[in-house]
Length: 154
Image (cartoon, rainbow, N blue to C red; front, side, top):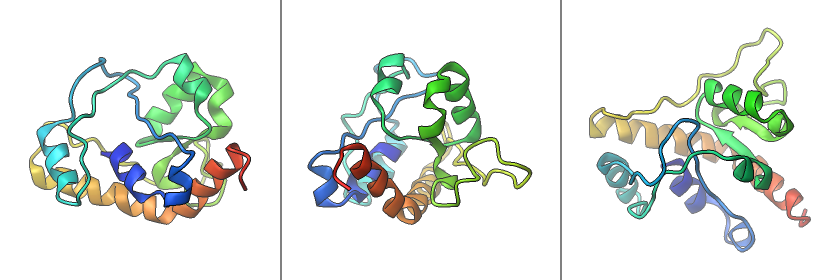
């Protein structure tokens, strides 16, 4: 859902040169989006029916200018496996906030992440969709700025 929501939220200008993708820290390749994910996104006019899962890989990490995770443990798994990605890896819920929330916050505590609704009812997927959309709305100026800076278009 996050990939589809982010893609639909980006400005037309940034969409011209941005590449948005998703990958899982512990997912097998080729799984379709869940029926409830597809339904929840379709309700907003976003089609993710063609989505297929893919595991995170060194190539994807090295190509990414910005990595947004759903939960702190996802971020931790990434920066543990690929320390070179630390400065560009954030928990989505913390991204719109000041830079002290990069994962090893000095006593302030990381904002809660977005829990995966896998196996739950459609209403939980809608809640997750809306939670992700809310964080994206808050973070969009910073996300677009990061994308433009990485592309040399700031």
